[in-house]
Length: 309
Image (cartoon, rainbow, N blue to C red; front, top):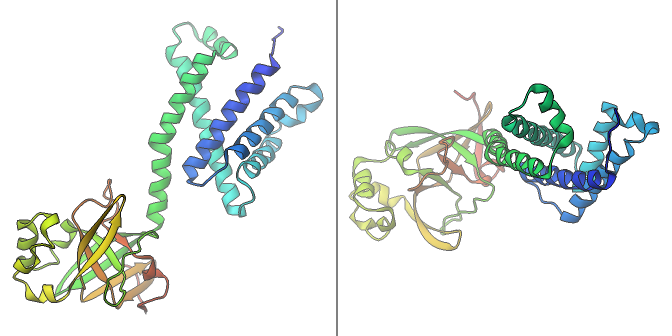
């Protein structure tokens, strides 16, 4: 049985699909890229497919050759990276490829109403419409699930247990190390961490909680003198911060003690402010605080031996 292969169409299709694979790999990994490098790598991969059609190049179908080619495509697309990064990108490349290929096949079989025999024949008659719709379904799966899974795993590796004590009360929160947190107090240039208000309710006094709940968050600063907890007020500072397209002020206070647990290492933070954040810091509730990077850089802390309870 003879099969006609149109080299030009095969070349174009592979460039498109390789480009999508590499772009999705970069997006999932969260790294920057240059489009000309992506297209160059995609073209190289397409040439590899065409060369593999020659009888004398049957060795190119060996799994080891495919792995080597994948590594080469990653290097061409993203440049020289540390070995660990290259291997990670290659892993993402294969995961994305499997998802896209499975989505195309799944799309064909989902809409196939004929027998299994005719369904298997449809793979050799793949239309542009089927390729586009199947690939689109794969991209949606990657966008909706894979990136979120990767982000969640990365967040978990940067999460720490934090114990806070204030006026004889204690709470524990899960904090995410936020390298973009550049909040400092005006007086003393002390680092500021953000914690959800609902987690701080059991830490603060009844007078402070009544004040915060009686006033809307945008009025906390304006009506601050109405708070009857004078001890808390003596430990309060106003922290200016800048969000996306906006500037505002945070109400923050100094706790009596804050301990950060990093595996088996216990870090006692000697000087820090807690900014009261009225919204949700994590959409899925995986953490309740945003930690300051200075807390893990050997500044303003003292270490103690201990095991995370």
